[in-house]
Image (cartoon, rainbow, N blue to C red; front, side, top):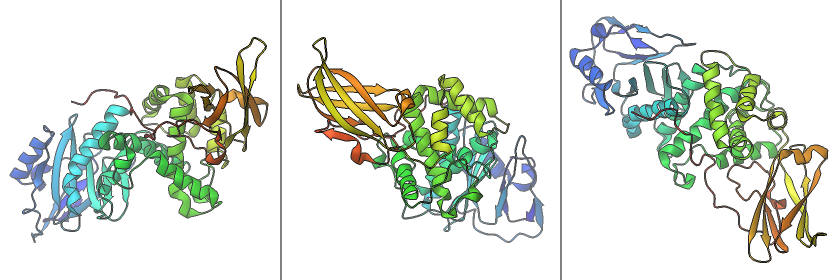
Length: 435
């Protein structure tokens, strides 16, 4: 890129001619940044003042194994850098247009690159750059544009940066087709963002900065779109959505919620976490289809999940299972049996989690496999109990249950549910430890 001599340029790839475009001091600082977790100011606030310099300079970058490139240039960039796992993590921003949060953007990039490297797949590129730009964000290999600080949403620079750099894994490493399947790109990225943000802000989402990624926010937006009649099957092309304003729900929040439900209530956290790593490992620098993702999860989990993909990816139907009645009766052997009649009000099937409150003050938890729905819309569970059932509750842990109608989820005097917690609780076990 040939630009006015007073400009600083950021870009995908590695700068190949630093001696031609950087001062000796800047080169010295850059060499230090690649070896430390501390943030180094390559261009300080004083040095970032716009300057008029005659002539031009040509900046040369080389990027390998990429599907796209991008660059940005300005005469007044501040430039901060640090590193993680030997990867240079950089932030370029202009003052006062970029707010005070941008002083943490190099550390934000370090956090995200380190986190997803540990949880999913080691970052394969030599550097990662964040540049302050217009509202919103956009991703490219080794390079993202993030919005300027939003004073009404503290933490917004981190949230945006974490999301955009998450795209380095989807679709920069795993090369899915966003124009055909938005959920394979934005949706999976939104899913992994929830883990990164829990890791950064703790396990209580009520203490997270407003706007962060969590299941209840995902579910609320999905429910609103469904109720408004503008929900779309996840397998639809984004440009075929009935209402283009719903892209944020269909591409981001809904698949994020669906994948968290799959992890926590269908295949289990350990299996899903292994499946995500296996998916990245199998399809790094290749171009998977939805079937490749589905098969990977099924291979690792050892389960036929065709019912799940069909329900949540190919239809707009929602989960709505309710308790119709509960009857306690003696069995022939003298034991007590609770007959719990369950009703499925939609086409969506799902494993059942049930808690019973008994007259002796105890509770009993039961899980029923998805196969119970193979014969129809109702199922009566026959459950041995120690005393008469006084109440029942479906989904005692609602942390990532996408049941859209909680009104029919209890009977009698229901037992208490579990305290709210993030769907990502416990997070992903690291692939390798941070250095």
